[in-house]
Image 1 (tube, rainbow, N blue to C red):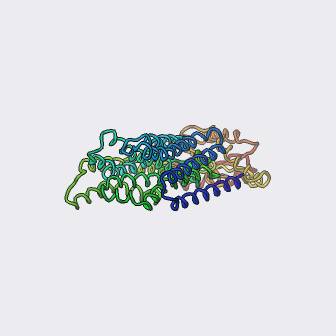
Image 2: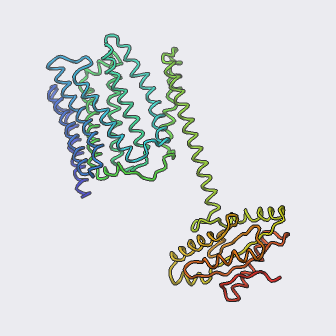
Image 3: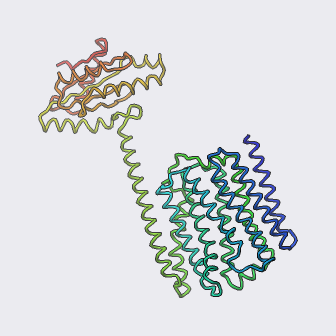
Length: 484
């Protein structure tokens, strides 16, 4: 089935590529050109719907919304041409603008659903990254696209609003695209086809608005047939990339979450965040160089927002580093299999326990516990069964001890026990409870030593080890103390 889907995708991509290439050589007749563009857009819509139908019913809605956006925008091309040729309507706003603008909410809603299914919507790190990139490029759009619209005095308020709606819609899609790319989900080809489609749309929209704001040079370019066809083809490419994304065999995974670390800063993301953060000072430097700061307040506000976003991102990174450092410390002091403290934790704690016992004039006991015939158990039942025995035994033993006692895995099947405030009798009783609780009918040998008030932790453990050898020599399944 995957082969069939791949073949459909390749076939559609080839047909779309040929159609876009052929568009460059069509007769210079308005209806021909408009019909060709609308057909390519509707073909992309059909491809998106077909791709959606191949997915699980619960995964189709985002793609249907994307298809609606592409259909609306492509239909707007035909409506715009009819308005210009039949009713001589070319000044903003025209009946075609609602169709063109319908792309933005439909695509934004579809992407929002994908984000929601891939990731927690309130993923703070991803939101900060998306906000930083959008703010940086939004400032750029304000200075060079949105704000210059007001300079066109012959346009009324509604026309201004409609023309400004296009770059604002582009910023909305930029924010959604960035958030989608930063979500914790699949990184398959479908995601990159979709990102390419959205990026191409942004390029096309920005190009038209910039041409409108260039004045006479922009008008001259808009009257150059070959240039206009290339610019129109940008949108046709975007439509087709949406179709290719929907037909990709892995499109269904686009709505699936993964365990990706959202805080990770790859080289590409770091470069993008750096570039977005430098847009404000770059604009200020450029305007100072030109001798007039035209957008001072806009740049100041943009710089402030970007600074706060960068600080918030750095704070998040620092918190994550601290969390990971705590995890590393915990792992360094914990046994991976049993979850008990390991030898390093034991070596850190015992000297402190002895010092407390010296200060408070209290006894303290230490023991080494060794599961009997553990190698034979492993050979008979296998190493996984041996691991399960170690986990079960450590849990059972821990359950018999006090909260102040320390049970640690010393290595292999060997465990150590520290019993603060315990004399020989109470320590022996505690070890007897452990022995009785040993699971699966197994036993252990133990060597028990009570601190003499002077010896080091190593000397104390050495005496317990000598007692352990005595326990093994006397038949195992027993607790021994050092010979006086």
